[in-house]
Length: 491
Image 1: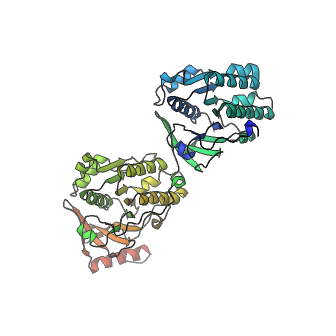
Image 2: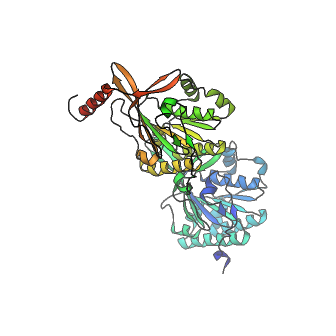
Image 3: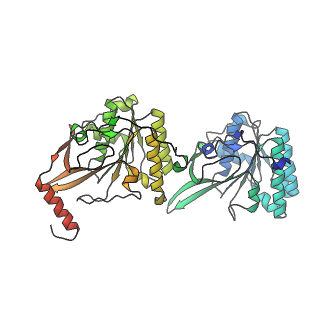
């Protein structure tokens, strides 16, 4: 077997230093592999390659970065000096830059190949980056010459034990026939929908191990690239633990009396209702009860800032501020402006695991769903999210705002049916009765426990939430009239 036909070692991986990417790649790049990173200008290819080099350089590796572009190395380094991964102390011993632009112009691909081999030997290189493969392709006399160049580079990588990344712009076909010779292809791209844009990564090809399939979101910040693997692809496909006899209550005696058996620990509940119906206070009461029992709790919100939330719940008799200071109550606040779905999921699940949270309240499911450019994805995403929360034994409530302010009808503004999201369903609403606006509560479904399905009024005061006894005939008459009116009859 020739060196070029030898398969890369399965047990050796090159970590990239890009958070989340090694998980997508199943551990990192395979040692001695040759990879192409493709993407339009500005997609993040050069930044990614440099981030990998400085990460490997800090670990003792020697990295050779060869450019075929007219841009000077001084300008490239100036653009990276503010990046967290950049370390001038690694220059030029651990990270060494070479320009192959003139060599390619004067000597073509054979001269460039000789330059790469010589510099790899001189610097004992373990990581080689060739930035500007499209220039090499254009300099090739034919497709056959370009294939030969890639083949010879693969032979050198196998013999000299270095891992190579070749960066190229996606002009024309995303994947050229010649690219099928390499060990892997990573594509970076930017998507736009209306005025909104986001970045995606996809592993088009990868020899030597399993990868997470499909498209994954990434972002660029002062820390460099950060990849957020698609939740559905990395979801743990194991059976959630059996909570046994463990049950969870809201800590509101009149509400808990409607289902004395309590919610199953680790279950997911959906609380639907229009603005002002009491969803935030009802969900927060579950957290307040958990704090009283010494549990770790988490609130994730999109509309109420932390200060406003604490003030709001304090006015209803729930003091969560001390628990926040003590580190038992955790608040994640994300303004609902161009959020990225997988980043939100990563923030939530990371906090749950880090702090061993047992009660979670996500206040604003509709805001989270708006973070998905493709609404068709929501069903699989929420199935994966609730599965991960169950595996962490976190009892979770999602609030979902309904568009109808009054009346008995229920409109669910979500692409996925409520039953696919939650085992338990609570419906809060307003109704005008006897000249006063009242709040009503109905339990639609509770899994594995008996409950009272009657319509109940509840009140919010400085003493907290109180659920009142069942309504008299007056309410039944009003609701019947509203239903007839909606169907075209006369109340």
